[in-house]
Length: 62
Image 1 (tube, rainbow, N blue to C red):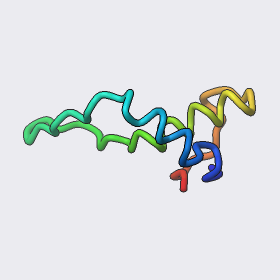
Image 2 (image 1 turned 180 degrees about the vertical axis):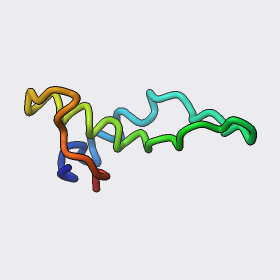
Image 3 (image 1 turned 180 degrees about the horizontal axis):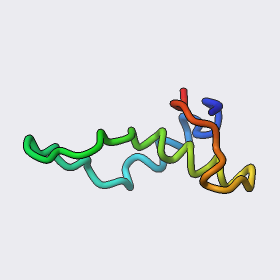
Image 4 (image 1 turned 45 degrees about the vertical axis):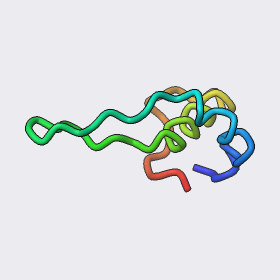
């Protein structure tokens, strides 16, 4: 995904609204958490392109 999906000024406005990340449990810790900015970039990508959730390219956002 492109890095310009969540520019720094947008991230500066959104980041304070997000709750803090919960602590990871040591037992049954589950899946690793995706960084919040990466998750937001994925949501913006789907909204801009109109692509279905099952079709986006795999990989990490920059």
